[in-house]
Length: 179
Image 1: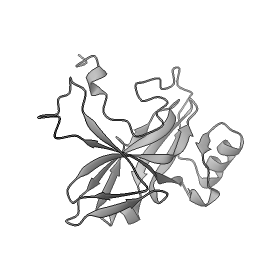
Image 2: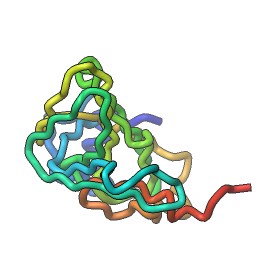
Image 3: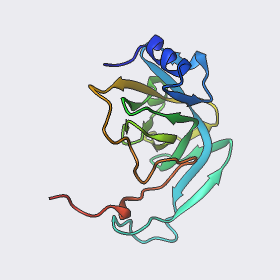
């Protein structure tokens, strides 16, 4: 079941769900808007010849209130909001329509597991032929919260738990292919 604005507000007020900072104006009928933070990671193409799934990726870190994303370019960014989900709630990360209409694609693999805590790393791609200026504090994505049929036996405790900035891929820490 997708939570309404009332359901989201009630869970925040009861402290079952934590969103910090929480702006009541960010509540939409069935989602919560999140704002762009000031931390970015760019793949450092000067230190790498090829991105490999079994090796760490080299990134350049940028901390700025404004960042211009060139056409057809990719950057990792973070939300301003720190999120703490209980074990009975999950969230989808969706780009806002107004952002998509600019040609900015917002993703985070689309999913936040029950039990996750931290800021959300966003994958941003400029599909436009013009640069897009990103501004800290602007609404960039929305969280759609869903209740699980029952609380997860084990909440998320993976390699991105507790992140406070944009975090690059840690796929190299995976054990390999599941059979």
